[in-house]
Image (cartoon, rainbow, N blue to C red; front, side):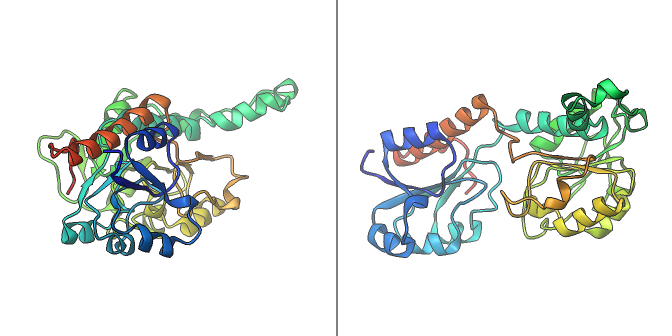
Length: 315
């Protein structure tokens, strides 16, 4: 298997990179200066692409690799993979579902608590020495327990968030493309209606053309000055300009954000807002989970090239 060419789209995980180098003939795309010339030279050698939430396999890359057989993504989301082109070319696609569900759901709850109880601001208050000059302001009007949580996308991660929020006595509402049977949670047929009927709105759906900017001005205004937005999905789910405007103007109560439209660039207007908590896209960022994800990527690649069933096939 050492002769099989695998293209790694960008740096993503040291363990994964080392294992790919050990097991395959690894090409590191980010180290290549002339990518067009490189693809021409290696077009008959590369049979697999490994991508993630930052870089994957678009139509141009897929067309440039006539021997490409599989795209194995180090992520659950596949918005960086041209699924239509993969199906057209007969290229298999895998991702890493389930293994990161708990970490991402945990972070969602952490962001809710951090925003509502001003955990980050309180920490800074102590570190700066301000506590010696007086007690920190009360935050009891924005407690988490009992707040209605609305979830966009009730898949694996959305359900995990819902179960955790229920432990805080939070009523759960949701929006998805269709109402799910045998659920006690209340369904709303539009995101605006959901936002109008919750205190905390969580984005947990896949990024597609239909869900790009699913959080727009109308949704933000429906959530309102007492509402909180939590985004653990993808940055482009949110119209970032509208979000920044609403937070600066006080039309939205707060936000907990793990993802952004143009990562790693974050709107500087958010830096000074105490009702906003910012994370560097670390939803699945624990050592244990990232290793499990890497093993799943490796397992899918080896299964494919040994003509065995894929572990987590998407296409």
